[in-house]
Image 1: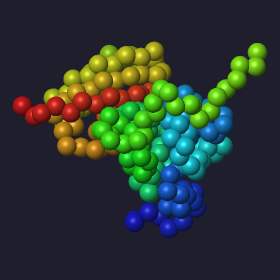
Image 2: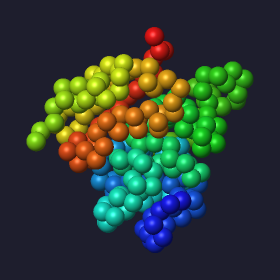
Image 3: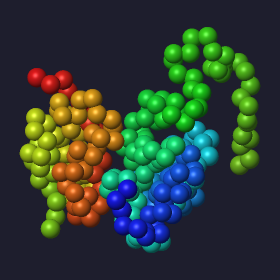
Image 4: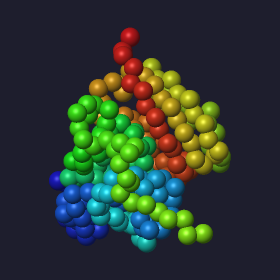
Length: 135
Length: 76
């Protein structure tokens, strides 16, 4: 804690990271990502029905500058869980594909390890949601 | 000054001893597949930081985007 005394931007970022269990710093917004890497990361989180806070770093260059100073991570997006940097798009993708991300977020996953779980959907059950072709 | 995949490959291999790298890219966006014993036992974050540290402030600037895949090898 040898940072200079007053750095409101860094303080605000630190508070956001502390206050939100899952927070994504990205380019653009979840509804309108401004970069392919941010878009992919949002898509993975949304596919898990995981609520997350999102911060658009684009409006002020100081956000990115201070964020990278804080995290020692040069690129965007950056995902924090429980105050810890988990990674950028590459790491999140690897963890998503391996199930580690789901585990970290406390999401039950029906991986092949579940031998007895009633999670798998058998083919003769009706799908919970049907989409009618209205064309 | 354009960045070439070959330059990134050479700098990663020079910067992290014992490492071999495959890099492809279009001059702005690059993908690096990097393998070596230096990554053994490190978290993913720490593995990627080793590679980012080779380039410092060039990441996000001169090197617009660098996608990284790391393979940790047993030390020989």
